Image 1 (cartoon, rainbow, N blue to C red):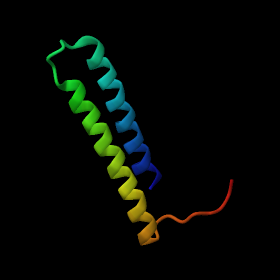
Image 2: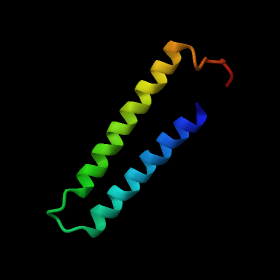
Image 3: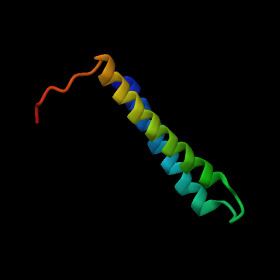
Length: 66
């Protein structure tokens, strides 16, 4: 479970970094930055849905520790 969440976070950060790179280096007509940001938003939504589904299935439990 931790590996899946970690992979999601790595992909989200990679997508955010590539969008920043494309914003600085690509010509103004390029749509690669938009595509990278769209992928980041999609991955964030998928991660949230996966966590909610995992909680519903009982794969993860809140422990109440701070």
